[in-house]
Length: 107
Length: 122
Image (cartoon, rainbow over all chains, first blue to last red; front, side, top):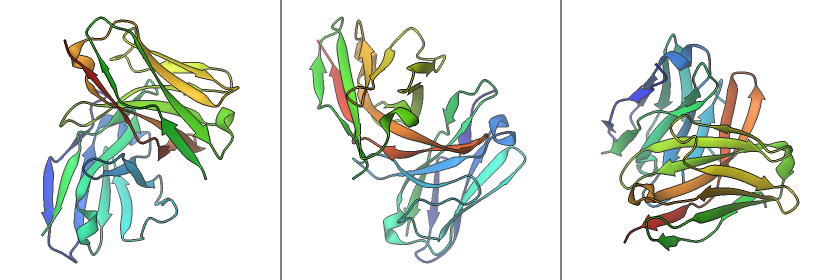
């Protein structure tokens, strides 16, 4: 299956740590990339591969992976991290697949 | 400044045709794949397809193959997404995004356009 699933929603207290997971067979062969989307805005790449962060993305965002699961961790979550997060990978045919998305609430 | 700038919002009727655009600037437009992504109202991101403007090599998601056409004009640094006959279910925001490849098995959409809102209604 090329489906990539994420938990629909997670919450985290301000300053605490939250992990967002992404599950799918494609993740056994391809690194995931992660995107943050705030309401009314275009998605923004926050991290990909082996902890590659674009310029301007804080280092509180990190990734890990094991088997068919990729994880995005926000260490010391800030109010501005409240957003929807999507992972992306490729299936066995090379087609991109986005995860179902996780809404992160910072309390 | 490196950016992708998309064409403006569109309101169309079912059955009409449409072509929206995505213009790249500040980088070598012919050297990176451009992807198109759909986001229906209140829903998640869906990959539609990619094009390599250097030679117009195009890949489609099976879900969108035959439903849309992706093209590019490298002479003006612009990629396009077009429909020949719109349906109400095509109502969505459409994003273009540049794909960067680090190595095999590791790539990402590192720059996104601002999105084009398409509304199809009778």
